[in-house]
Image (cartoon, rainbow, N blue to C red; front, top):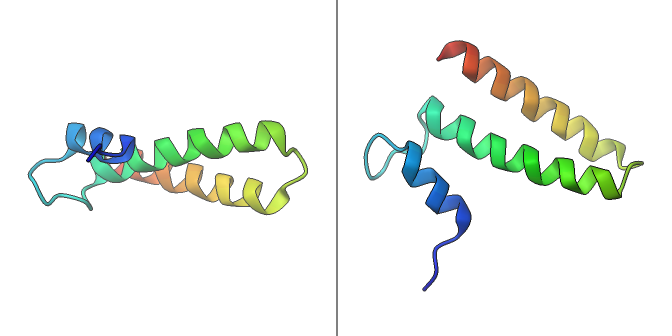
Length: 68
């Protein structure tokens, strides 16, 4: 079975096999979600609830990067 691109990018930042919550992994996952949502908002400019979610994700990623 083919692995999703999310798990492939996860493996690059994991410290060990079961590491899913470290700051590095969280930043990587948030970055992927932000990229995906940015593409969505290019098409659907009036989707304000998604824009709000995007801003929350960017703020969360910023705080995790500050932590690192």
